[in-house]
Length: 150
Image (cartoon, rainbow, N blue to C red; front, top):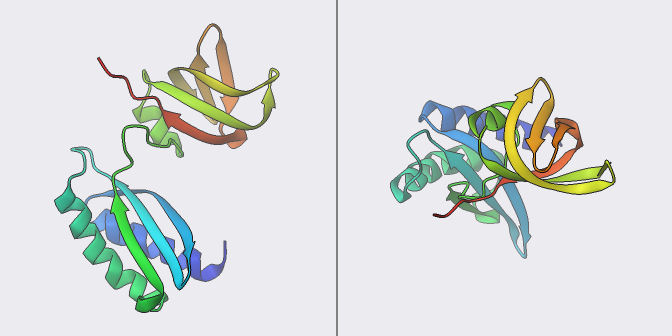
């Protein structure tokens, strides 16, 4: 990650946390004339449209210090029902939920797992389907919550 992007992400994270939100992820997509940045935010009480507007306004001020205001589009969103789990705290928060994991490389002849997140021990995610798997966090390509509908 280049230095400018790293500084931008750190500054955005600080600004968003000051407002009481958590920055989950930043996605960047190329556009014809610049980039589209999508900020995924969360809050213990959930995220509504007013939250997204508030964070968007505060984030634009920060981003404008790093990037030409005419060269980017900004979108702020909740992480959704099938949110990604990235940090240790994410896994801790969602123990007891069903998750899908795609690995970078095979483990026990599998790259894809779906089951109950039962624990996290250090850097190991404990997932249970028909058996118990201990999955190193650094081997995870992507992990998402599987929404449960009643």
